[in-house]
Image (cartoon, rainbow, N blue to C red; front, top):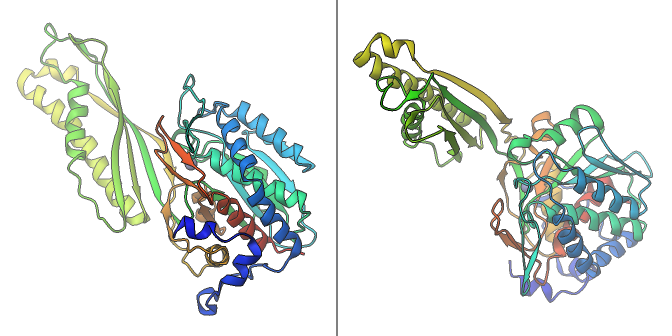
Length: 430
Ligand SMILES: [Zn+2]
């Protein structure tokens, strides 16, 4: 897709006239409500207010939101949704901000959300720097863009008085990233909005593509433990960090399929207190992911086997040499599950929510690609609730790094326009 080419097309009305959607591709898609005057006004408003949207993105991002510490950003997000005139806005007991915009009839309920949390710990400098047209700051794309897109859609619906048949929930949720383990979205489906969501849209990503498959993941914190001792005086007993090293060396050689894409990673290691002590623990965090549950299971089984065999190898190496002394100092292994995300690949391009989103993109003049990722949408997908994750427009790089960037470019507004059009199509407009 050429951004410059899209920029040349001035208004939503012009898009509609220019695009011809082949009917066969959209057999399952809901009608895209291109002729609704209030929705057209909202879409034009989204384009016109893009500078406002980016300013929301920056100012929200400058409120730190480390894992489990999203409350300050949540309070501000709530305030901003209330300021748009949405009457029912509340924070639920895990910290999700939920704005309810009532539908006029009995249409399906649509939830659109961005996630409040970041991967960055407390004390991270979250100021956003401007370098020409490029914005740089931790979280500026992931997921301050998503939060801003949700606000932009809510604002345009309010101002243009868009009337949806189904109720629309505009949500900023907690706990999407690693440690959070999707706890915000899990809570929405288990408690706050249990049984009330017909379609779920997560805005999480830069560009104009969508994700309709949930990449599954399993994460372990692995600890090898022993009594430890002096590196010289107690020499001859099993060493937890050596066991850890044995495990990592074997994990590094695990073979995984390229398709379905399956991955593994030792992301964090720790343990030990000084160079001349046999440590009493060696710890690592391991992450495994796959597009399918079977392939995830397979890599999981391999890794679990390795963890035990590394333990045995380290214990045996010393009991063979120092006998009872090593026997008394044998290591143990503790595996804590720190995250499970279900894999889901049952949706296809012709599933209604996916087809509708693809058709909405084509109406706006671009052709989104569908793929797999691991986001909040894994939760509804695993429950059989139609769900997608869409990009929020713009271009960016370096998600989860301190040098993360976002550039709105000439057509950043297409992200929120696309989001608005999908929500309107799914909920129905009057
Ligand atoms: Zn994200």
